Image 1 (cartoon, helix red, strand yellow):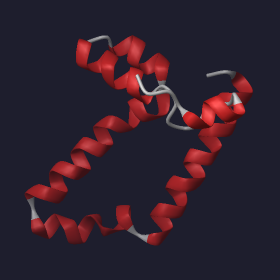
Image 2: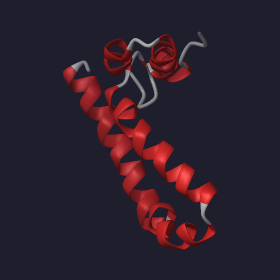
Image 3: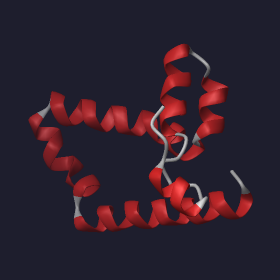
Image 4: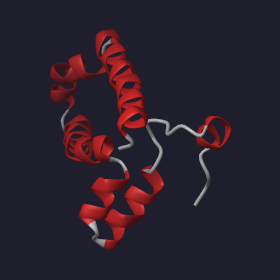
Length: 93
């Protein structure tokens, strides 16, 4: 596995820390272990899969899903990642 540069420099977990181990655990069928490695992204996987499937499957759906890709949505995602980074380092998640 590729080590996290942010973790090596600061000894803090970034929002993506555990992502590689999570994907590896999912590929092996160990879903509880995958959730343990990165709970936020584990919970977001179904949402990401559905939105990408709808995005590629139907051109009309792209217009309706524009809210997920707007500037406000991007700001929401960045705030969510920042909060996740803070919470996981405070509580040791």
